[in-house]
Figure 1: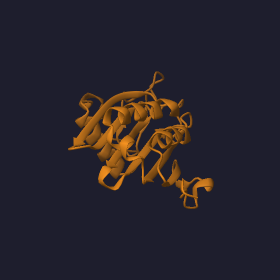
Figure 2: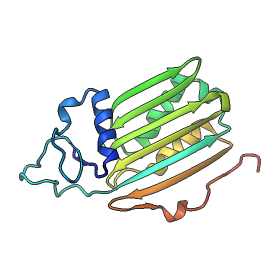
Figure 3: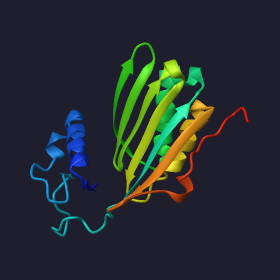
Figure 4: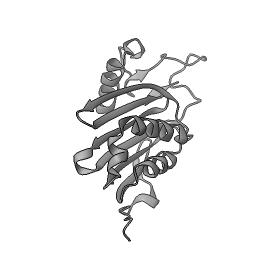
Length: 184
């Protein structure tokens, strides 16, 4: 897998995450002017960046409000639903890092071959924040969102899907506030 991360902030964040997850040996000690490189420094032809991978990705950011309280607090079931959502997107899970905030708050980060997925729960508000960023065009962030909302049953949600490459664009279908209500 190849990753090129281009801004000054993102490579630093990538290095912190890679170090925390034990991938120190995969961080290029001398980042190029394009940013930090994770993984081998060249492809089989010896060139950088590898021609087989496009510099683009999709980023889903969402807030789920008034979630089913039982679903949000059942940490085992939530972990399973989150894993199912990652798989439904087509992403490849590599490693999981989590922190439980007693009694039932959870921050869960899944490092995927394509980038990352995370959830940060606020059970005292029956709410959570989620995101999925995937490099390339193969993964379906909408499927991730659909599976998680299917498990958590938020009464309302707001989401944005951001298309990223050398520019950052919000998906035209996501420009308006995506707030829905069960009570409607």
